[in-house]
Amino acid sequence: CAGSTDGPTALDIVKNASIECGFTYHIQQTSFGSYLDKIGSDEAAGLIGWLYLVNYISPSIGAADYILNPGDSVLWYYGEFEWKPTRLTLSATEIASGNTSNATVEYLSGTAWSPLAGATVYFGANDQTTDGSGVVAITAPDGFYKVFSEKTGFFRSNGVLLKVGNPA
Image (spheres, rainbow, N blue to C red):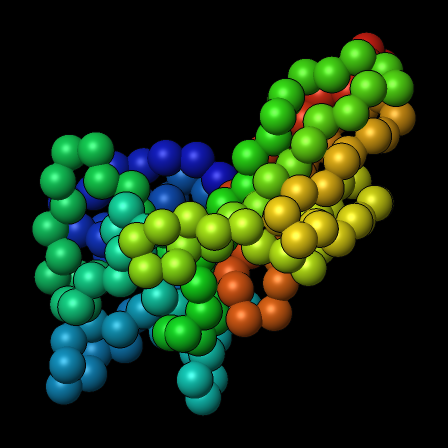
């Protein structure tokens, strides 16, 4: 589910999004407090589970206790605690037929964004791998494409819509 919803806490974002997007979730009560252990069919197991970031920073308290401030951005992801956040940007979100848009993939290293080489960028049924600068040139037939990236040890980037030419 992509989009925005409001809530007083980071955990309320999941609860409210489940209504808007139609997914299920499960919260387990532990001695440490509420723990989101499942969204849809993705259930916590071993070192992999549901984690959250606020403004790309991992808070030191549970999501049920993290009170959000106006303008905060919450990102929930399924992965390991050590995985790093990524982001994808396009040089253009609308291009003419036969033209190219550059996708740049970066990861958060401490407090700075750095290029992510070797990430797979997906668009439609196509994929390409970023170069040493974290960039890949996308040329595709006319259509609408959701562009996103993945790489092991990092969690999937945001998705960006790309319009090529005059789609039917």
